[in-house]
Image (cartoon, rainbow, N blue to C red):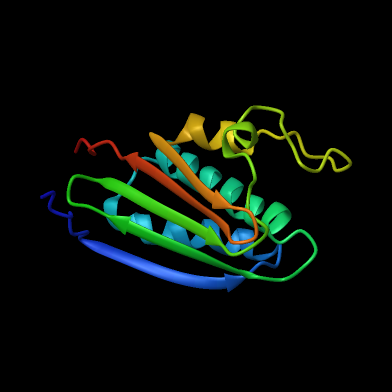
Length: 149
């Protein structure tokens, strides 16, 4: 039996899928992670990945409607960061295809289809679970470097 690790701290926040709330998500993750005294570049990487994930939920998950986005952040004593972004929007029919660079479901918009590629470049691990009509759950993980004093 595998024991589940207990985080040293965590938050959960739900917010409506207004585009303005992407900024809130970046600020929330940044503020919460300051307790780990992260390096500025690492914090920027995490904020960018969260921004991409929340933007995907807003733009693709809730394309023509308003919905709710859950942001959950956990930190562990080994400086491991776990972030979950969940929506109950339209879902993704083919996750593997959606994660391919330049793939987009909105070719008429000025979007490059690089959101997942960006997330993968900034985080140690990116997982996506989705079911059409039920929504998408995105898990982002990164181990922050130790600070040298």
